[in-house]
Amino acid sequence: MLSSSSSSSALAATASLALAMRRASGAAAGVSNGSEIASALAGSLLPAAARGGWPPKSSLTLSPSFSSRSTSSAASHAPPPLPPSARADFAYCADLVRKSDPENYLWAMELPKGPQRAVALALRAFNVETATAADAASAHSRKEGVPSSSNSSFSSADHQAALASARLLWWKEAAAEAAASAYGNGTPAANHPVARALAAVAASRAVAPRSLSARLSRVAAARADDATGRAVPGTIKDLESYGEATAAQLLYLQLEAQTAATGTKGSADADHAASHLGRAAAITSLLRGMRSHAAARRCYLPSSELESAGTSAQELFRVVAARAGARAGAESGGSPPSDAAALLDFPDPLREATRAVASAALAHLSAARGLAGRLPPGASACLLQSVNVAKYLSLLERTGFDPLAAEEFALGSAAARARHRAALAVETRWRSWRGTY
Image 1: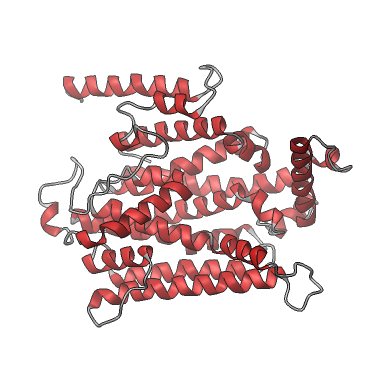
Image 2: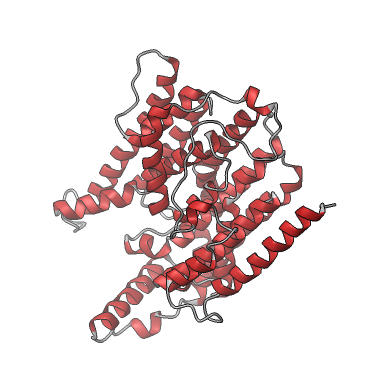
């Protein structure tokens, strides 16, 4: 039972939560810009660093500091503090994640200050660098004016795939070098802030160097395979395997950092939850990126589900192109393409295929959350990414499994982005306060 003081704290937090959620809804409160949303959240529900805009800037502490739930004996088992000389590198990681991956930055800031949070920011920065390798290659290809025609001996797609593969190979080697540098054998870390931050993580033993190298190399390799393969995934199991090789690997490392910081033993249940959540997170991320992927003629709806629904990747490409044309026409004051009217509504067969993929993600999310009661203290904070996943899947269902409409609803305007992220901030802090995910 809660004491009177903790009961008062809980009641105050609940009242503030309800107020913030009402304001975050936007329409009822008449919110028209992001600053009003930020004001609604500028209380005890967000970290002090958050009270000046979105996303909150990191108040990174490199010396060990644990949550109030940690035992006093944990510090004796904790790894040595991360070196102050690495502060600039971790600050770079924090800024990169805050700008490029604000939703995951939010839950990372719920981790205890010190090694756990620093590890999260370094891992998420590595994730940003590898996840955007293909986009960076595409931008470079356009800048260089590489021919886009498939009749060319070396088309734009070939050029982009080669560049992305090279970038990801570099990151795979950088991860291995960062881990190797921890053994003092003269192997230097790559000259990049993220690589140096990872080297500091390995040197401090916040994560075991061998584990860091193996898991991050697997992430980079999986992304390289994806960048060079243009085929539509065959089944949902292919998407699940991709999630295990990418998002789940980062969660395993985060759990390892948590056990090292608190001096506790690893948990098989926590690893199982991370596996399920990683698969759900990766599948959700692919659904969220449907517009940009389709614009690059990439489809992550499995061919088995497309065939079962009686549609194809080509249909998805046509729908996305029609919506892009309609939007461009509206912005320029011109007329939309002649076929836009028929394609502006997301076709039912594509909705059916999307529903099947989203259902698989939801099943993994439910399995991950079903293990919450069996996790050791502190492990739940490592899995707060589940809030992002659940929010999107709920939004996707409300839009009738139209990922393009879901994207417009959540991110189509500054006000929409503010509402979406404010609601996400509230629930993330709430679940963190409750010690769950």
